[in-house]
Image 1 (cartoon, rainbow, N blue to C red):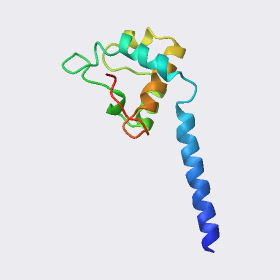
Image 2 (cartoon, rainbow, N blue to C red):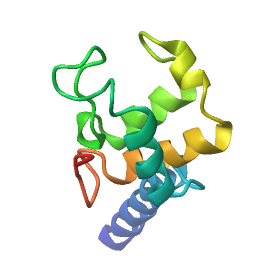
Image 3 (cartoon, helix red, strand yellow):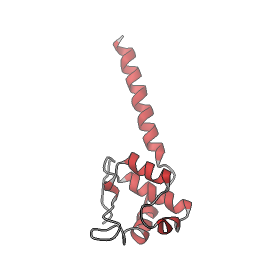
Image 4 (tube, helix red, strand yellow):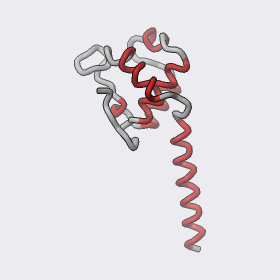
Length: 108
């Protein structure tokens, strides 16, 4: 009976990891970092009106929920200025370097 439990646990783990990897798939994180620095960092740095916001501010699932809602607190116009592809690239960058990712980072 133990081998069946191990196989079931492996399947559940594989499915959950697969779902996480798929969540922000399709964006270009290198372009996303550039877009974030150019269009977001001015308002999302320490001491600025939007408050400090870096990839490590949220977990991968929190970033996915944020982009799924497409709601930006404060200046929605700034958020709406990005194309759908640009938002996907920014999401990919933030997701790939989120607090719980393999490579968490700030946006230095």
